[in-house]
Image: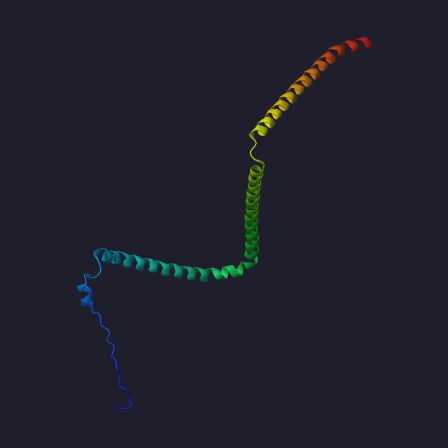
Length: 166
């Protein structure tokens, strides 16, 4: 023992005891903490039991269904591929449609902001369209009356001409 040097300093760490904690004003867990533990431990245990039961049922179902899958795989694999591709195509078309709609909306808003919202020109275009629709309607009505008058004159003159021929 004479070979070992003796330490010059000794470090002392104070040890805390439970009695010291109580002396500072803490008296342990509160009533609400105890009630929460009493309530949640059985609930957590029952949920853990249900999870284990679900795992066991899933494994038994997989063990029973695996031979059926192996037997019917020549039919199931193409069917699953077909259904999967159809669903993928449907989702892709929806995504493309949504992309197109959002792109057109963006382009419309961009053009509207770039050119400005011109209410006077839009109102003028509406008035011209209404005038043109009225003009076309009047022309159609006049043409219909003209055709009707020609058919009435033709039907009234046709029997007279047939009488002359005989």
